[in-house]
Image 1: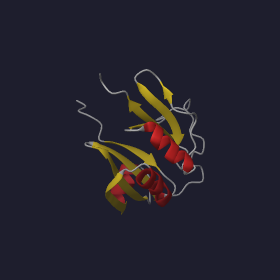
Image 2: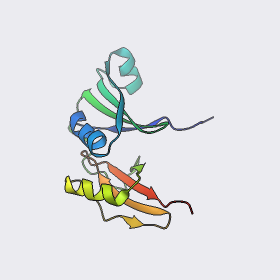
Image 3: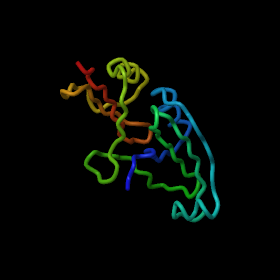
Image 4: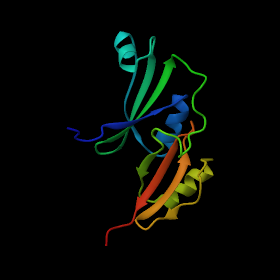
Length: 145
């Protein structure tokens, strides 16, 4: 029986660049970091000679993002065009306190957004891209009356 979701994992090409985005720009806290390799990592990932760097970020109580960089094996086919119509996980949604303020701050720092924030009835929503092109949704729910 499923009891919940532990975390969402995002594959990254450059951990430092991704930490600048998720930690420094979005304000997520690093709660753990490790590098791993060896037979168990090979078995779990299904990749012979795997060497990984993993950084766990706390979003809020009980919710984490896991940034996952493969130092080996490397690939030249890292997806550069994540589109909403592609299969697989198409975006990660983060709940924020003041979407308009964060939107303006991130725009000033060069973050690319698909549009301006829109009010969809239940709250404000906007999509942006992380440094690897992964779509990240920012959402601010309307206060309960």
